[in-house]
Amino acid sequence: MTTAVLSIGSNMGDRLGHLQSAVDGLPALAVSSVYETAPWGVTDQDDFLNAIVVASREDFDEWDWLRLAQDLENAAGRVREVRWGPRSLDVDVITVIGVTSTDPRLELPHPRAHERAFVLVPWLELQPDASLPGHGPIADLVTALGDEGVRLREDLKLEAA
Ligand SMILES: Nc1ncnc2c1ncn2[C@@H]1O[C@H](COP(=O)(O)OP(=O)(O)OP(=O)(O)O)[C@@H](O)[C@H]1O
Ligand SMILES: Nc1nc2c(c(=O)[nH]1)N=C(CO)CN2
Image 1: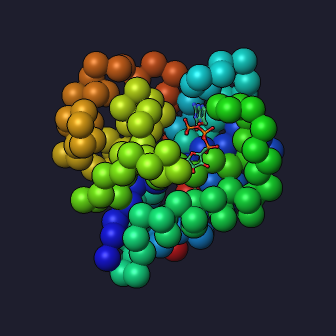
Image 2: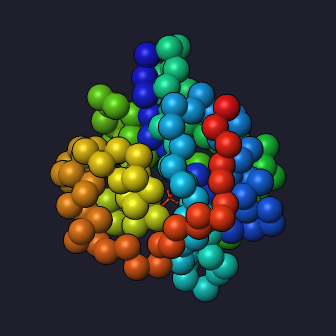
């Protein structure tokens, strides 16, 4: 059995609908609140909605999580164009508990998670004691990074199955 932490994001079209489609397709144990976040990386694009999902499956290894993430992106009509550019649905595997990987097709933990408040702030809400292997407690990372550009959207809710 493996447990994964996944980041879901959208800044095109029906943003909340795209996030909900990801939650519906994941064996979700817990789903964070929805956050409105300033674009990271390529800043000249619309704001994202982001959330974190903790999911678990008996028969999954880390590659199954990547395949499922990519299937969900494709189902939401994602076209791979600009790196860090606009997207209907982005599903990143942030960590799979107990697994590390340096394979460029699947780096675990996600190599940029520690510098992304749009990942860390919703993750902290779900798992305040979590650590990012190699980078320490996520609470400390959020303190160092700040939560600028990450705003709780209490009016938007994701329905866990
Ligand atoms: N932990 C991971 N989660 C998802 N994809 C990964 C991971 N590690 C490596 N990859 C690889 O990254 C490739 C590009 O992913 P994607 O297009 O989603 O990048 P991005 O979302 O634009 O940027 P970033 O990787 O910085 O989040 C994928 O084809 C995948 O094989
Ligand atoms: N705020 C925010 N910025 C991003 C996001 C995202 O989900 N949220 N995803 C990206 C693709 O890697 C690039 N930039």
